[in-house]
Length: 405
Figure 1 (cartoon, rainbow, N blue to C red):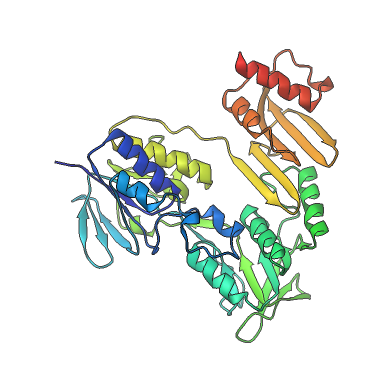
Figure 2: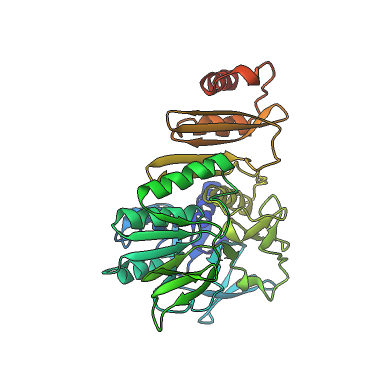
């Protein structure tokens, strides 16, 4: 009898899991259930292609033919309302009960709502799915003054896309600098200057008091006494894991669904991956990590015993006339030495701890990303390198040589 592998959610974690299951089990039934009326698609492309038609195959993670060739069924526009752990069933919102052999939860996360008065006015948006993108694009037709609340990577990509489409854009960030988790102070300042040079308004250390307007957005009040006129607002201020489906089950949950390093939950045979999964007290919330978690969970669902190893975090931004890379651990206090160069509008800083590379930031040149990533993963020793008198170029050459040996 064929085994039924069910996956709730239709993001990159679910596709990676489905592929891993099929690689290990050629005959089992694999079914993916998603709430959106679409095949699984790349959410990270939404902000980059916000002003383009997204209702096509270009943003799909896999073309329809791939599912046919691998005998993977995708059921779209279906909401799973509950899980019956006792009888190994999932239940749809229409009351249909579907049995499973192994179950994977990849329900992702929702964007945090904007906690200010007026957040329900017409013209206030967040960007999480294709429907959001289509609604934003439609509303912005004939409108030209957009405020984006939030200076994280998605917010910056969205702001750049809107700016290049001819909109007047302002970015509001409550913190005192941009991308504080991914950049040091100097890199944040370089990014700030590039944003302002491009013609985008940037407001740091800015608190938001209220969305102004009778029924639709006419402006936004900030810092108690300042009003910024605008005709639309988009916000991106963090995410909350979508854990409602397991509320009345025995599956343990904290901020997200708690999993072990096999990506298995506290209930045998049920796994979780991606933005909904919490491992060792952390929700990683990155595209590449969701992909890796999906692969591990799928492989283990099919009978393997693979441990998930936390991937090196990578953040890249191409916008505001710069290329930017942040990789590994670059937080203050997490390193004991560094190498830094700023030459010809390029800034590179390599972070070192215990005589090993733990992170890097590069602005203006991202060609070394793979070298940085591999050196961090392999924990290449820096013994014998005079860190005080070596250029970035020669340091990277030395790392490459050590990786070859």
